Image: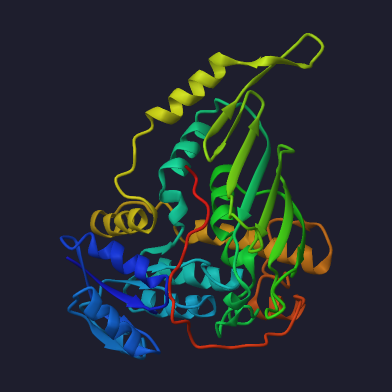
Length: 386
């Protein structure tokens, strides 16, 4: 039995609690830590758990009964919490974003290596059927050389979203929609395409003047093979119609699922009809990939528990989490300094450290309101990939 502690009981922690509760034969939630312990107590009662509650996470570091922790706190706390628990001999599953800077990511990875404990970063969209199927199709090289990827990370958040005390500030949230919303799509992009060689980006705050950070950014990534990717990160798009589109030499595939393959006439112009043979092979590859038993947070937590119990390799570890933060850091560097950014970012780069980032980013506005919480803790997950 793997004993779990939940660190932070904000809205996202509910997804972790529900997931762990699906595997009561494999794990048990034995502790919560939150600066608002009454919130944690309400979850203990709601989910009928036999778990202790503390207001200071440090009380759990030396608890020998705890095997692993889920860190569900605001982004600016992720690094220190992860490092402390790893050094205390606990496996760590940390919510996105992994950390506020590459330096913090490297310190977390080092702590995991030194403690010989698992460090995994939440990327629950990898654990859904459409994304797994798309990844499988791309790995079969059925669409040929990829020339262009379109990533639409479209979310919508009302004005009051940034009233929460830690949101909308560079210091505590670490960034805006690029870091805290598009992180999922940027993770999926680097998972499928690898790391680019250069990035150019722009960012703006268009509709949330109660936040220092961006609510919209657009980035162009260029790869070694000259392929381009465009990433739009947003919390101003009504409808939240999210998609990833891969244009290849032989065909186009995407989530939500669509396949299109065109044939060229002698003069290079397309025939009106599609290349049915190519489309059929790609569709068959998509449909034959086995369905996942669990999806989303539940799928990732199932995987995390298996990795602990069976010494399996993590699908997303600290290195993978760091790759995503490096891309986001490069987007912020380009958007704030108005330059083309070459990758990788070195340790002497101003956007490698948290202090360097804070010294170089623009404050679009100053935060006007700060509330401790909302009475409605509902989280919606935006567009679907079906």
